[in-house]
Amino acid sequence: MIPSRYLPRPLPDALKGLDDLAMDLRWSWNHGADRLWQTVDPLLWEGTGDPWLILESTPYARFEALAHDPEFLERLREQLVRRAEYLQKPSWFSTTHTEAEPGTAAYFSMEFGLSEALPIYSGGLGILAGDHLKAASDLGVPLVAIGLLYQQGYFRQVLSADGEQLEFYPYNNPAMLPVLPFRTDGGEWLRIPVELPGRAVQLRV
Image 1 (cartoon, rainbow, N blue to C red):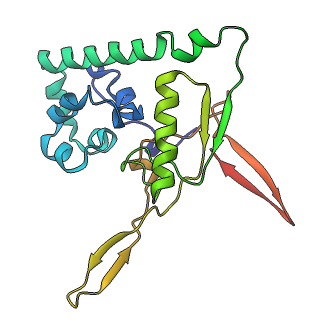
Image 2: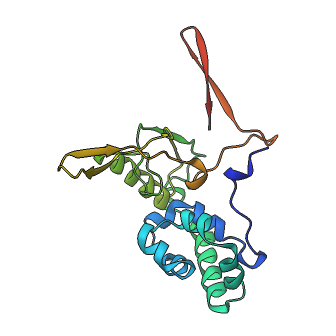
Image 3: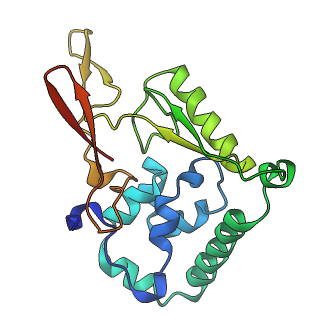
């Protein structure tokens, strides 16, 4: 069973689906739900623009209040409907390539720059890879990205009192990132063995 720290936090029943919106990184290029997250916590939204961090950081009492806010609930319902339509509507790929059942392409990259909320990139090539994924999603191209979840992403630069450049490497806490472990049908965390000279490395997915 996956530790609870890797699962979305409990929410009032009336807010069902809010965690799905936070986990779906489509918010990084489609801003239809911006106002929804801004309503949850205006200051945190302004400072981070990160729905998953807002979901994990906001006091539960705030969610209880929003569960009785008709305007917020209507906004949530609208975004859930739009997400369902996005996932179910015929895509460019499905309507253009109808001659056969397509396979799935694997896109391997050391970096994917989707959002600052997922700091697993450092430069332009990562941003390019992220844009590729966003376009593939909108076009309905059957593509799966395979990369690395770095414990330390890109570094932060600051200046010391003497004007020297300093670098800090913040730790990427998976529980605070919009990622979840991939589970097998039996509910176990999927592990893939990779044979290296003299030993096997277990990759968690």
